Image (tube, rainbow, N blue to C red; front, side, top):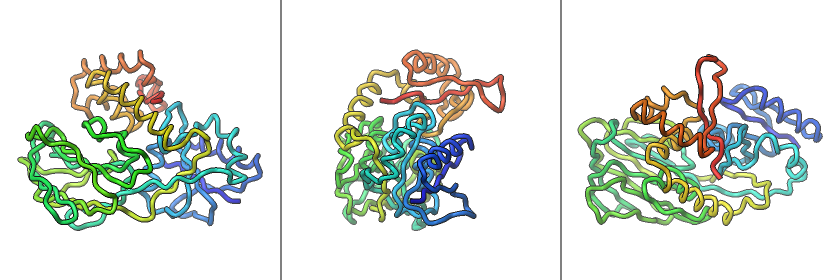
Length: 332
């Protein structure tokens, strides 16, 4: 058995720890780089859910199953094993007594040009917040609505617990063969999220706003769009290794329900900071203010709330000891 180790944006110490655990278990391993890639049975991906998304955004062999590992205390939907507990599961990995979950992906075209497929969601918004965007939604070539709203989100089942849920979208069972579409803060008060079959062709056309509009992929990268965004199921799906017995569709749905209850009880500013940290990773207070456009005082109060509840932890920046950085500590 041979395992590749991928850790873009992670510390080298974490990769060394994983390699040592694999070596001690008698498993051959190598670090994946742009210039170094070997045949492998599976891939260990560091960096939690964000690391898993980054991995599938790259041009690696997406036919291999991957095991996502978190380096902190974050409990994710894609990476459900913490680095500190990896050693206790390595023999299950060695004996290949794990299950592989196929996670659907969305293929995306922006103005006719292919970009990388996403695991969570495709969001289209005006480049400036609080500015309406006009668009037409078509499914399988048939017009569904012409709308004026803050934006629109197309989500996979695994992504239904992320941005779309915060925008009022339903939670989808992870193995549901559907995608969901949410118009965000539509001027039409009767507008509701819709569910479509995952073999549907989704087109967001006639996109316009006072300023240019942007497509946000998995909450990570932004692309300017002139007129049209097309979404459809992408093959092959992502293959995620599940080592824990409770890592089933039902347990994932239970986590989503609990997360929804917690999000509903949070002040909007705290919710926004938490989602920003989930997508962006560790940030300083200044970075959070810049990315959320919230006043400094509001950011301080929201961070205080999240720290008190235990959702966020504060650490000293390695680059500058005078700086404090904030990251998610748990979402259970």
